[in-house]
Length: 165
Image (cartoon, rainbow, N blue to C red):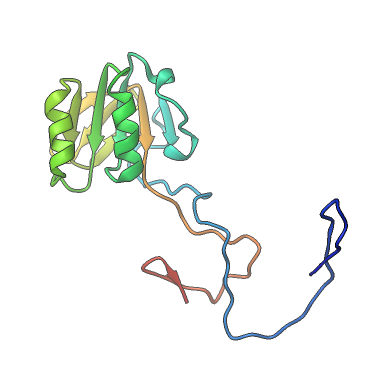
């Protein structure tokens, strides 16, 4: 790549072939939402979305929302939702939660903690692994991102603990 020193900031490039031992790909990894595999997910007729497309809590006013995931994005989003939604249900792999989240739950009567989702029913029911169920308007997946490198031949690239090898 060469930079042309014009005031317009014009950049020109030409094909370059260089051999190296390491490659750094610094494209970020928050572009390919990772969705869980839940029984009934494909036939559940209500709203489902990933946190990647969440912008504001207002569209969820007076809704019953399930937030699947209890990490940073899930906690941040539920803090906004609890102010406008009728009910917010957190579904998490672990029911061991931080003291901070425990205090938030105790202050909001419309915020509830559940274990993992077992299945989704066409009529809007969300069944949890403990046998409990609710009827929800929306499921918001706060389940992270998958690594994606569409510009690379990844046949021999392996992912191990969020690192490539």
